[in-house]
Image (cartoon, rainbow, N blue to C red; front, top):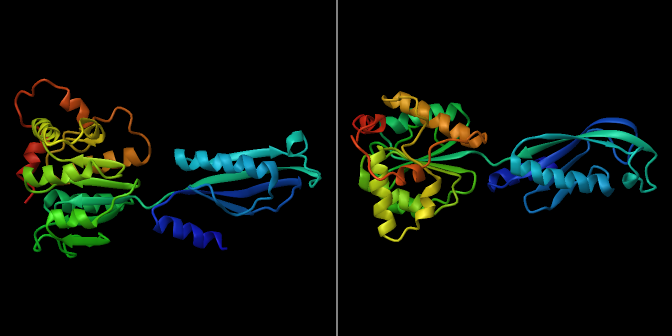
Length: 287
């Protein structure tokens, strides 16, 4: 079974894994330099780096690497540690590099106005794959979104029935109206998406969350929502807002999300004076 084919298969299925490669060898070991082993997210393996206790330790490290999404280098001294002496090796030292295999970062953009157009340009350059959905055939076109792998001109309810975001997915809601934003958010918070963001003012965020809670959507589902969407860099124009949103997406993807504002913070406020912020100004620029 070819490891590289299995890596491609994992990514196509939106799954995780980790590849361990012997990168340095000194002395005699029960394998060879460049030997590889793939560990899938279900714990199954393809290939081998020599078996025994070394392989068991690498398997455990691979599980940790795919969770942290950060590579590690492991060093094993077969001469000094008796647990690696199985009678099959003469003794030696080896270094093993373990790197994560991650599914593509897939960004679902709901809305096809000015913010969405600019967001897709910036996010595509940052390595996100894009799926754009809007209910207007004149807006949801491949010509407006050449970087998108899919563009759907569908009623939002129909689109939401067809789309299945996974744990590696990101959702950004930038439609032309609050009603559409609200029904998409109702769906989005109940998906497995890693990130959910919605454009709008703090006041709008609170009003929508309260409305959805009254409809029976559990309050805790909103704790992971980023709204107003994007890092607070004072963005006003669609181009600037696209940069702010993409920066937040990158922060989540790279696990640099400590301190990022979540919807739960805004929901905890008793009131919001003076309703307009940069996101409100952006709403007028969408179409």
